[in-house]
Every structure is written in C-alpha cells, then in structure tokens.
Length: 254
Image 1 (cartoon, rainbow, N blue to C red):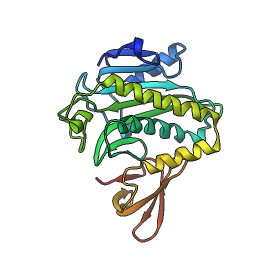
Image 2 (image 1 turned 30 degrees about the horizontal axis):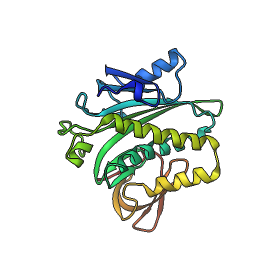
Image 3 (image 1 turned 60 degrees about the vertical axis):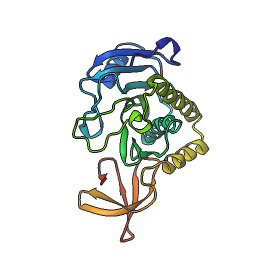
C-alpha cells in the first residue's frame, strides 16, 4: 500500500520497508518534534513486533502495518490502560463498518469470531506522573489470502468479505475514530471514562459463556466478569471463585 499523504487527515510517512514502524517512529520522536497522530506505515516489516515478543506475519503490500504517536500528559500513569481501550475500540469500530462479529480479545487483540485479524503493541513512556508519549503499533490483516506462519488462527478482511479492500480507507477510519476518542478523553470527565470502560467491556471476545483458560497453576474454566479501568481481567471460575489477572498472567485457550 502506498497511501496518498495529501488526502490523509494527519501527517503520514510511508516506507517501503523497515524493521518496525514502532522503532522508526520512536527514533524519529527522539530526534525531532513530531506532531500528534503522525502516522508511519510500511509495505513490509522485517521485525514487526507483537505482544509477548511475537513477530507479526505479513505479505508485502497486502496489510496495514502502521504506528502513530500521541502525547497524553493528561493521563496519569495508573490510568494508562485507557489508551489501550480507545485504540482497540477504534480498530474494532472501523471494522464494524465493514463486517460483523468483531470483538476485542483482552487486552487489545482484535478478533473476528475465533480468528485473529489484528494485533497491536502499545508502548508508553512515563514522565512526571503521566504518560509523556504513547506509540501504538498496529498490524491489521487486510488483503492477504494465505498465511504461512505457525500462527494458529489468522484471518484477513479479504478472506472474510471475499473481495479486495481499500486499505487507505480503513486506515483513515481507524485514525479518525481514534482522534475523536482522544479529544473526548482530553476532557477527562468521569462520565466519558466510565462509558468508555463499559463500551470496552461490551466489546470483549467471549464476554458471555464459560471458556477454558490457563494460568501459572494450570487450566480451568471460567466466565469473564469484567476488565477493570486499570486493565485487570476478572474471571469467575466454575467453582464460584473470582480471579483477577494482570496482562500475561492468564491465557485464553482457543
């Protein structure tokens, strides 16, 4: 994909290839003043980063591989999960305009039914009690038809819809949704943050029903109760015990 920077609502930097758009944007921010929502996209990443140290498979030119930056100084360090909420919801809602059955798998993977369509890595730099800088890196499967890695459940928008998709239109929608959420977040009203958390919880993958999970003690079955504003996942197991987990402390079994 080679987006048209002149029609994109924010500053757009297009690269043919880079190791990671997060790395590129982070280095750029360290070197010069970069405006909020500056977006770096690449046709191919040689070392795209995912959660848990995973890499992200992507056929060159077929998918959205991009990062953007904001400076949410008004978000306290203890509240930084709210940034994950607005970014996850922005991707989900851009996809909702095109397909059904999209959900957010805690903390911020995007799923279509039981298949992963999007992964992201959100890297925050803290300072003076708040979030000095947030760089969000997103890999969204758009037009790739065949996946070759050992990833268990990838899917693309083209596979779901059966047609080629305008990648710049999807990217624009994501960024517009995100900027709207971000501007509302700046007002920092309790009503908005409460509704945001509620919307995030309503969007969760497997939010209804009992499913298998795995933690340090082994496998168990539970239902999702909620995700707290600090990002902790609360489960209710089949023995009636409430369990809470921070990121990486529990896994969904799919």
